[in-house]
Image (cartoon, rainbow, N blue to C red; front, side, top):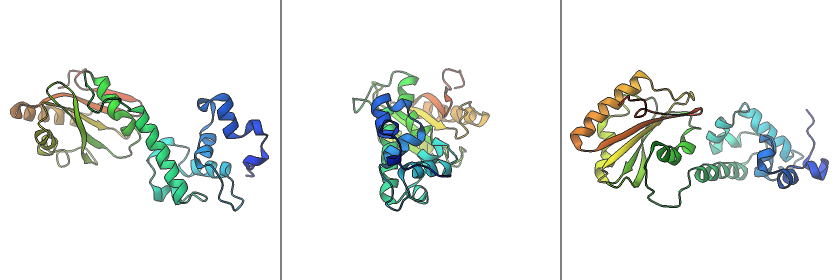
Length: 229
């Protein structure tokens, strides 16, 4: 397929000019990527073609593209180390902006507050990750920490690993969070059993588990709201 060089397009139809005129939300994925990539490789392989090939390489799945490593991005013709870094940096800025909070230790008063903190970082993951959000006695965030990466089972999510950072940080309570790479946040029976086991451990240790949130591309599920814990 013969793809025009950006300079061959009428000025009004070039990605940057369209962004300035119409706003970023009216541009296609290819146009936005072309702007991030910025320029071609100097060998007749233009930025629009590179953006198109980049999307093709990841099957037009933005979730796969966001999760791609520097090495994976660099395999696409025209994407060297520098452009791969530009792309990764732009995605990280996007995730940080989506979860931005002005306070360093914000008050976590609801499930929505907890979701806002981690959702942008977890919806794109291709592997399951289990995190704990540590809170002080006033429900302010201490920090959030990844406990395990991989399939959710007792071998990877052991109570001692879940509660170790909470004890070390003198947390009064914690919120459990993990993602479903399938995109469906519905709790499995294994999720429910694990949650109940961890709640019992929390009672013994005097560390309350406020909620267990499951993140998926289609949204999230709160076990507390569903009375599953």
